[in-house]
Image 1 (cartoon, rainbow, N blue to C red):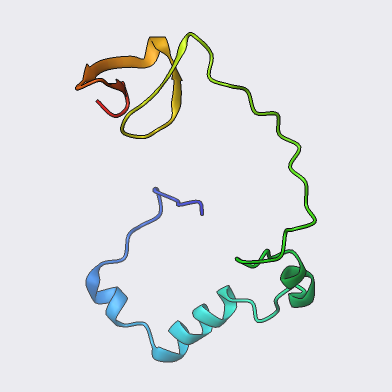
Image 2: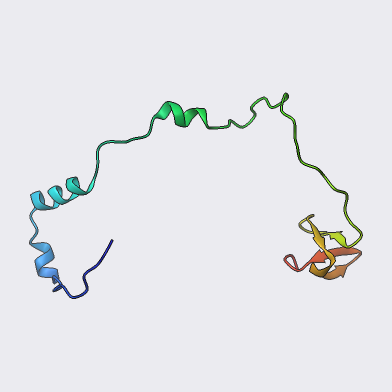
Length: 98
């Protein structure tokens, strides 16, 4: 919303003088009563938790951990060796968790 900073400002006295009808008219003018969303179409796109996905196949190729990678002992994510911050009690810790 654009603001005209050169326009004269209204003080507290002027703000209190607005009539109730004028305030209601401003509120009604700024709101729209019509909604353009078809609820049936929106409902079809939702995935429910616990939906039956037994017939779905994953198409992601999973690679084993490479020799220049490590698994963080705190977040359990696989990172490149350049992200290694420290080793505590045999646990490798990444920079984000350190």
